[in-house]
Image 1 (tube, helix red, strand yellow):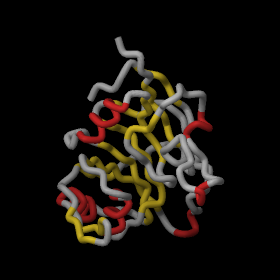
Image 2 (cartoon, one colour; image 1 turned 180 degrees about the vertical axis):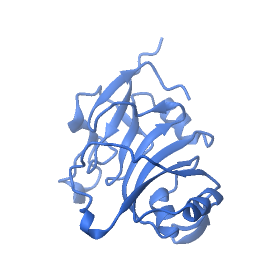
Image 3 (cartoon, helix red, strand yellow; image 1 turned 120 degrees about the vertical axis):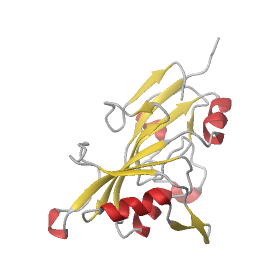
Length: 193
């Protein structure tokens, strides 16, 4: 019998993917524990940076965290709002892999799945406004990767000329964000990819 607890969370913009402050410089940052009452020992599985939103797994079982993070076959799908009308050519470049910088070294991303999202997805307004229409059009793309370098998707869209304005993880393996609104979470039996 599994005595551990597992959750699916829609991480809002502006929150760190952690429960404990481990740096004195981040005293005013928002932590996941502010989003609900979680059992002692709950940890996030994987990360989303402070500016990113979407699907995040939480668990009290360190073995689950390790299993998910070490499985390089698990797909992670992101919906990305970019600056400008993303082109089919840019999507093809993303699919084939683009050169980004990882720890000050050049890195060629693995081939991935990418497509333009039309119609555009509908999400609740973010806590911080993206920008207004006077600054030109925006568009949405879906990017699905199996790796997860630091700020990888943001670096990928910038490399093809369409900087990311908003990034929302919508799927990990076969688990989706579904109808969860930002800040909401549900407890699940476990994670089955």
